Image (cartoon, rainbow, N blue to C red; front, side, top):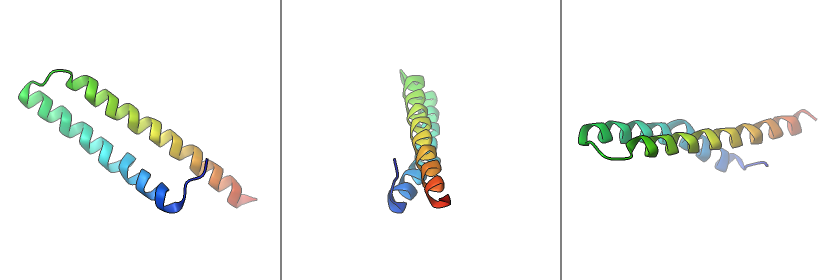
Length: 69
């Protein structure tokens, strides 16, 4: 699976910046305000980040292999 440069850069920004920041933000507010299921929400955000990161890695490896030919 290959992404366009624009899609790859957008996905990279989401995986590296947005999802971790959102996860920490939810964890902090959940602790401060005693929200229920905060751990489940944080775990879900982190699982999404890891899944998208793995998808990006596959795309990057495929792209680099194609460029090497």
